[in-house]
Amino acid sequence: MSAGLELLLAERDIARALARFARAMDERDWQGLDEVLSVDATADFGTGPVTGRAAIVSFVRSFLDACGPTQHLLGNLTVEVQGVQALSRCYVADMHVGEGEKAHLTFRTLGEYHDRWQLREGRWWIVNRTKLNHAHIGAIEVLGPGPAR
Image (tube, rainbow, N blue to C red; front, side, top):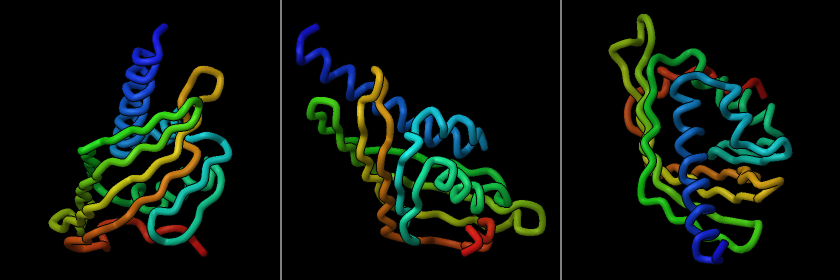
C-alpha cells in the first residue's frame, strides 16, 4: 500500500473514531467509548486531569447520566499522522437539554478537542484528550453534578 493511501486511511479511521466517540456520548453507549479510548488514556475536559479509560468514562457519565438528550457536533477536523502517532483537532459544539423539571433548560459549550492517537495492533486509539472550552451558554444545572472529588 502506498504511503499516501495509508495516510488517507489513517485520517479516515481517526475521523470515524471521533464520530463514534461523540455518538456514544449522545446515545449513552458507554461501552462504545471503550472502543476509542486506550486503557491507559488520559484526559482533561477543563476541570483537571483524569487518568485511565474507566475513570474517563465515569467522568463523562457523571455529567451526562442525569441529563436529557445531548448532541455533540464536530467540525473543522485536522489530522496530522506521523507513523504510529497522530494528532487531531476539531471543533465541538454540544447541546444538552434538561430532563424532567429541567426540560425547559439547555446548556451548550463551544470548544475544541485536541487528541493524541496511537496505532496499536492495527487500530487507532485516543491516548490523550484535551477539551478547550471557549464558551458556556445556558443553564449548567441540566448536567449531572460531575465527579465526586
